[in-house]
Image (cartoon, rainbow, N blue to C red; front, side, top):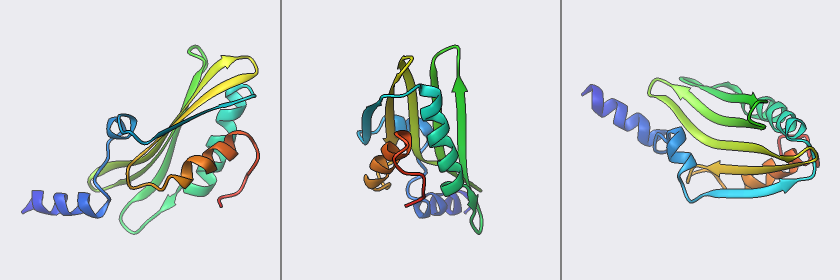
Length: 132
């Protein structure tokens, strides 16, 4: 019975996608930004937290954001954390190409609308700073 409830929760939460599921999906979008990867990271991280983080009835919407200066990269992940563990929606990788150029890869779960990719691109480039 316990596992049946967990399975129903997974279905209700759109498939219980792990981070590796999202990263290995065919739903990825790549683009370059003519800016330093740290600034691109701050743009995406700040607006992601403003727009995504919050509480639901039985779970929390969380943005995990990490910057790895020694590797010249950063990551931002959107997830829902509840009773069945984290369910990932987006994973965004930002990599330094040069001091003034970054490469961004947006991995999204299959149940996330492709429109989110364009929104992330606009945030990365500083063209939009709202949750639209």
